[in-house]
Image (tube, rainbow, N blue to C red; front, side, top):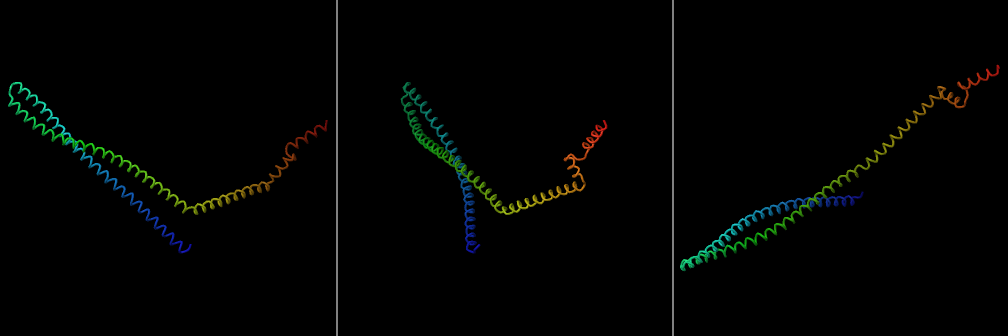
Length: 227
């Protein structure tokens, strides 16, 4: 391999390593950003509960003022029925105070209600977005893990391919040697059989020469000839 190719390969390795570092850094940054977003949403939910509590308190005060106004209107009417016009007028003054206070509290109630509605809507959108991002992050991490595992397997296989080839060659040589020894054992058995004469007996028997069957036939022929 030329020096130029070596340099090019090294540059490619450095670039690939740099990309891996950048990708890993991006994943860590995403983790931190999602944690911060989760904390922000949790803090916003706490603020929402405060607004809801204030809105409930103002709503209670508005209801109480409306009740007082209604009660005092009845009292003013009773005073007029009894001819107590000055008393009725004083009661009306108090009713005016109640109505002024009611107007202020009603404005606050409307403001708290609007804020509560808007915050609930924004929190719902933020929750949905955060869940979607976390799901995508889980898929990204899972894909990254699988691809890393595939890379490790591929590298190991590539590095051991020559070893596997050598192992297969060794296996074939062992098989051939074992077969050769087995052939030698079979040849030795055949030679021992021929040397002991058992092979000749077998061949004569197969040809119908000698053996008990031939002797029996000779005896029968001799007996028949004497009759």
